[in-house]
Image (cartoon, rainbow, N blue to C red; front, side, top):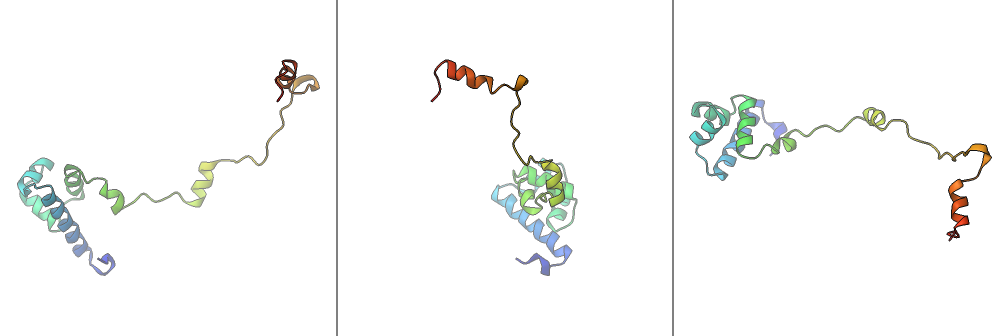
Length: 119
């Protein structure tokens, strides 16, 4: 279904129809679902007709264990390229050589050689 060709009212009614089909899949009556989400059956019928509050739609989706569908409906936008750069912070450009006091070489290397563990 191409939602771009529908009016806002028609899209709201389509969402209501989808909610109604979901309710039927769960084998719930309108009365039972309305009671579970704390609204009257009349308010539920308005919701299915494309009216009602977004809060009631969310409550109905939660009661039908379909709240995750909102991620498909309106996914969280990815961070912009500038936000990604800020999150990444300053990246290292090169490795730094360890410096040991008194101009020594790596003291661990000396211990390895003394113990004959040099492979």
